[in-house]
Length: 608
Image 1 (cartoon, rainbow, N blue to C red):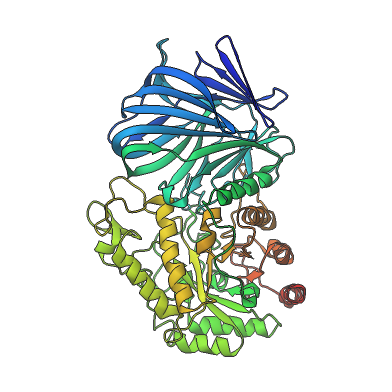
Image 2 (cartoon, rainbow, N blue to C red):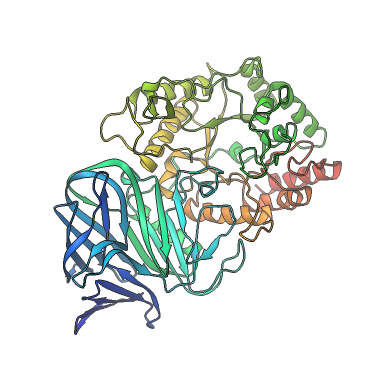
């Protein structure tokens, strides 16, 4: 690298970029080696305390120094919330790393990087942002409306908080890789990725330091900043440095995800390999009964493909006597569906018993009305050469004592608390009872709802010690407890999650692609096969040594279903959700349709 100075400027010239510091403006212009600008990076940051916003004033610097193999830029300022604050840029040949460092005492609220609130000597006040001189943003997490690459002026949220309510359907992967890519070219279509140059932005930190619930790309009027939501749960006493935002040029978004993963692995922040070597049965075709349950129990006026989707909703409470999909997680129904499929040569190697085989989600006792003898049923599947996974709803507090939960201010449980040692002990005991040969003898879990993480500064944790993990770090702790107990009960137990963050490689055996969405921003249907092919590429880049559960629910119609059946074996482990009809359209599956499944499964098995 070469560092040169001019009148009010410093310029860092590296192999992958040029960075020009403009001292009076408190900015750093990041450009390609040929001078084409990516962004005028703001050298401000706001590290809010839960009780006090952080605003910068009395600016100093920036200063430039060389340390070993990189150049360090430090922009200090006084702070309304901390004893001292410095924005630090570490410039390497191939990347620029941006952090903020504070000293003092307080609890973190929201952190803003590449921008923040400040008062300038000129009298300009308020929030300052970095510019976006790029056209588009690649988002690695599925969202609805469906748009893989969106305009630079559209925001992105990556994290573990979301559902199907408006503005919240962005946690289908939870957590996804905390990595964006900025593109030179405008958006192509819902799942297309434009050609042209790309710049990646990855959040790099050990998973135990990711005590955030979300990372947000927040654009406004030609500028943007990055927000990390600590939710008032991380205490600072002395000094604190934020996770690094790592900026580097990449060939395309898939390269961005792969390099981001390599970055985490090389620093020891993510495992290089899965924790468990995959036995052959893990990649056998899967039947999951949820789609068949939905097809047998539509609610009037509600798209039966999305029982949770807030569009054209039917009655809030089903009419008396009308079953809902969870009501049909029954032994007799599963026996009927599996027998019917077998008549057409469709015999899965793994069967997932979906929502709701439990009396209560949190305590996970089998419902004897629906499953009179689940242990014997599992033994029967084993005798037929099949394995059985149980659907598991993460975070759900049903049946748990409040002392083991995160509660609202009134003391009502809203989520199980992995920070509670008593809950972790209970969870391990539950898992042992479900998987051990002396218990139900099931073979693992399909984990769902990791996006239901607790969030809110008014929540309480009666059973967790001060400093217990929160956010992404807490989810990792929860899954580590479940995963460790599963492996202790049965060494080849299979744990499937929708957590394709590289640091979750040690608490996940297989990545599921999760629920299919529907429409692009213009209201056009996005083919399921296109959506799930995109997700499979994200999973393959972030967790390249983990097999993929291709999922299959909900599918809009029989034509889309057939197209995806033919695609599944090319992107992962085939998964069948339907036995007799497609829930969204109500179309009956024909003999030819089930013959297509049998054929693709035969070919897949022959190629394994």
